[in-house]
Amino acid sequence: MTNAYKIRMGVLCGRGLAAADKTGFSDPYAVIRINDKKHTTKVIKQTLNPDWHYEFDINLKPSSIPLLINITVWDKDRLGRDFLGEVNIPFKNVFDRNAGGSNSGVARHYADAENQPGWYVLAKRTEKNNVSGEIAIKFGFVEQHIRPCEQYMELWDSFNFQQ
Image (tube, rainbow, N blue to C red; front, top):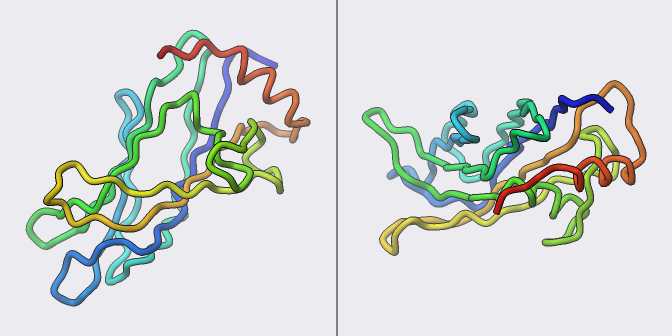
C-alpha cells in the first residue's frame, strides 16, 4: 500500500431528533469538523428523521492523523440556527461500531458489504439544550479493490494515533 490513504466518511441519517420549530419538526443539517476542515450536509426541511446521505473523503498520511471528529447537528431557521446535539469521535475509534455493536468493529473498505454504519447518540452542551436522537455514520477505506479486512486492520494499527 502507498503512503497516502483515503477514508470515506458518510453522515447518512438521523432519527428521533428534537423538534425545534413550532410545527413540531426541525430543519436539520450537520456540520462536520476534522482538524481545520469543515463539511456541511444539506438542510432537510420539516423532519425529525433526516436522510442526508452526505459523503466525503479524508486524506490520511501516517505522519498526520486527525485527533477528533466533531459532528454538530443544527436546526436551520430563517434567522440563525438552533443546537440539536453533537457527537465527538476520537479518530482512532472510527471503526469501533461498524459491525453492529458499540465496540465490535474492524477496519474495512467503505463498499464492503459487512461494513455497517454506526449509530451515535447526540449529546448536550449544557443542561438547557433540547437534545434527543442519534445519527448514523459510516467510515471505510477507499481504494480501487476491496482487500481482506485483515490487511486494513494491519494498516490501521500502523498509524500513530495521538492520545
